[in-house]
Image (cartoon, rainbow, N blue to C red; front, side, top):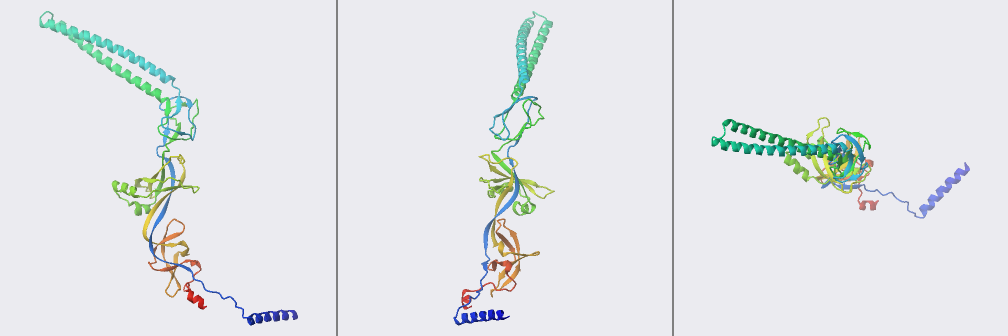
Length: 389
């Protein structure tokens, strides 16, 4: 007990000494909250859509003829140019068919030559008998026989010409089939999966691979119904829709890992039919792919910047979420704050929101520390008033 009294006396002495020395004890000064005055401005909103890349000219490679696959000239993932050899099918049967067709053509040409010679002879005989008949040297029976022989010879020539045409068609068909044994790339692109191996028997139903034409890539995505109504304006004429697409800004493709593709794209397709199940509209954005960095199947996000003019933009830090209400604290003329219910839309930039209802140009709101403000609390302190304190 005696010890406690000594300590209390020591504390009292210390306080008295400090007062006697006229030492100033720091006073707490009120600080103002950060605020902003509402004004309208133009802003660019990044509208984002999940998308999947597809080659603009993806081609399924399938043989035109049946046979044994002799050689695979490419590998999966290889970049190939248009006209480059991809696969070779056994061509021996096709070569034999071509040789047989050429032999048939040669025989048909010989038959045509013989038929034409016979027709010329029949013509001369008919003309001679006609002359003799006119001079009443031969009978009409001989004239008629020579005429019939001439007609038959002409018919034989026609048949021989038809045989030659058919033989020519057979040669052309055999030549094409022989060409089908060497499969070349129809477009420049990337080789996909190759499910066959050398030595396999293939038919026109066998899928050899998929060649993704990657010079230009399409990002396929869907636009929601609300955006359709506000941006695309359903019911546009074809000419209006094309003009609308031409006026849209360039788009950006962002990969799933957050990497932004360096080349900008353009909206190139807006289908005219809304999917009844999803209420969405299928769209395509085309991107140049000069370095071959884009592949079919890559997923990411298409970012379309949409300009909004004369809108009220405030920072997200100024917004207070209270159950189902969205509030901001407006600063009144007496420097106190009052809660105002507002309606906002997201800008997509992670920093700001657009106020569509509840505020007016010239209003002043708390921007930093709004979550700590209470109704009627004073939030602004002029410097002159601080100095008085």
